[in-house]
Length: 248
Picture 1 (cartoon, rainbow, N blue to C red):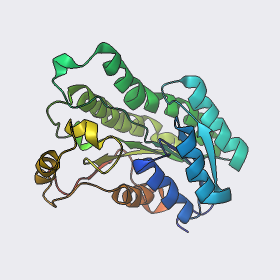
Picture 2: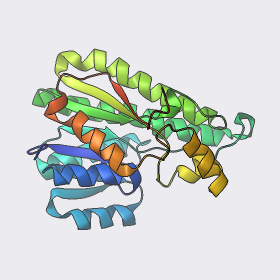
Picture 3: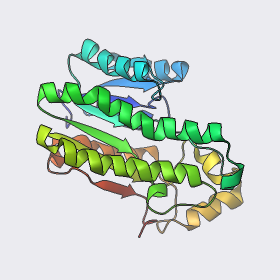
Picture 4: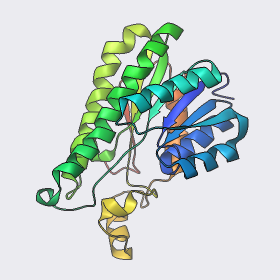
């Protein structure tokens, strides 16, 4: 019951890391708003989780959607204590010169602007309640970039910068801002990170991780649970690598 009485909003929670976090938070007695653009998968997750979860359609690059997402948490569950900015987007692994302007814009709209809009919506709620926690899912790409992902890498550097900058600005309001930097994991984005999903590509990616495997949604959910819980109440501005040692 490590999140008893807490209400969390998790973006991109219909699959992958976001779904695992939503499930873990509910298992620890939180109430969770599952936010995503995939309505079918999102409703399926909520149906499985029961009364402690609610679905909200949200494109995190759209202010109206993000505002409605936060409002839904307060209206449905009476408060909001945790915002997890997890929704992410990437182009397929390719040379920088082959990435279109539209793809670049979409990456930054989701991975960077989405955090900004989430913060703008959540901060007034957190201030009224006397505090809160924002967890941003960044990436090892923002610490140790991989080739072929220049635009994505840059967006994750920005996510880490936003985390640290907001942490110092919002500390006086008892709002903690933290981040996770996962290494590549078994999520719907993995194929794009690798460029193609082949045994050779998988072996090459795993060879770059000292512990010898991809991250799992459960790895991310376990670390996220600690960071958003009261056990981490003196941590802010930290960006934790969940990476099997890749960034050493």
